[in-house]
Length: 185
Image 1 (cartoon, rainbow, N blue to C red):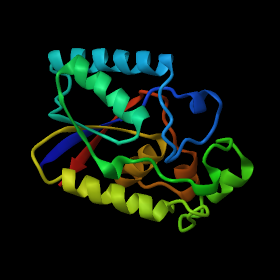
Image 2: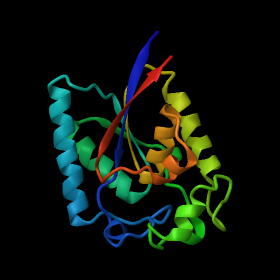
Image 3: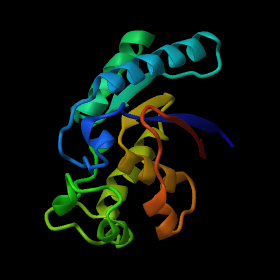
Image 4: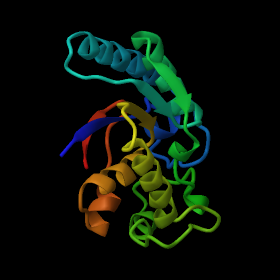
């Protein structure tokens, strides 16, 4: 049995994160704190690479500026190559974009996996594209750092671990938090 790792990092802080709004597919940039978080994450990854604690061959980033700028900071600090991966784009939450993240109706609707939020993307479609990406990445000899969004983090986590609909809807990670996963083939 062989196994390989993959790493996931959520982008740095945005104005809408501070305002507790759903960013989704809306292209919201990083705050100054978000840029600083990304630089610090780059330093941390560089140190871990130099100490042999982790091995990463390439960074793949969402095309949205908050993730891409985070990935650029990490690439600049580490010297790792960076490539935009369209499939890492955040879920389009349709009518919920720009609304409160903790809105009661949204919290309930997040558990309806076939709903597309009036012009958005359903959880099933999101997971399909993320699962396809992860299947593709599991087949080569590279170790990747994926830089993307909280919604993508949910889908990635559900690829590796069984989750109830409630667990899925409640799952989230902090800005610039890094998760490690292991493929088992």
